Image 1 (cartoon, rainbow, N blue to C red):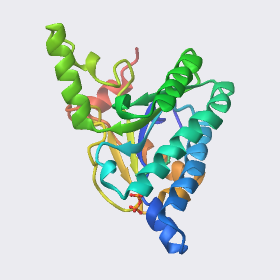
Image 2 (tube, helix red, strand yellow):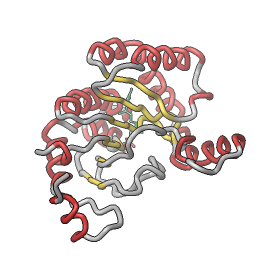
Image 3 (tube, rainbow, N blue to C red):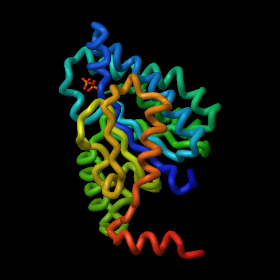
Length: 237
Ligand code: FPP
């Protein structure tokens, strides 16, 4: 696979945790716990294949509407991951970032996020963005507010949460639904969309390989014609 056929940035909607658990007569939250294992697999396999950035949708602006015990389980899972996983990420040269409105999270969570981001800021192997209390519409709204306050309308994208990072080349959604669900609305403009029926806790290296193989076969045109793109890709530099 040539370097250009490996996505630089993959955005992932990790759907299907609840159904994975229910199929096993377990509480829904057991699926979220198992889902963390699949995130580990994604990070390891993605960095081995040369992916530069991964963004995983851990908790959306809309997920507060879930039952209170599920919301608090997800928040605890995130807090535990911050306490237990960050050193491992750091020793693997992974940069860790959180995107979303973190102002409503607990003080301990916010300070662990700050510490983790500072500790890993110079790591360059892979950037892991965890979207927490994130919504694509929230991001555009907060960027409009910042751009307005700064009195600037040029270079609007600098105010978005993903400023400075390449837009996702590949979007993966597991769990059988075919929708974007308020994820990275601005950044997904030209992203290739891969939908999988696998439930997130079952996501493994083989499924990542299928997504990457599918991606490698896409012709990315960015508004141009297929002919233009093919001429450009064979023109020597
Ligand atoms: C969607 O499945 C999944 C979520 C809302 C949560 C995803 C969170 C994790 C996998 C934990 C990640 C944690 C870290 C620290 C990165 P669903 O519950 O909607 O599944 P269903 O459609 O089967 O009900």
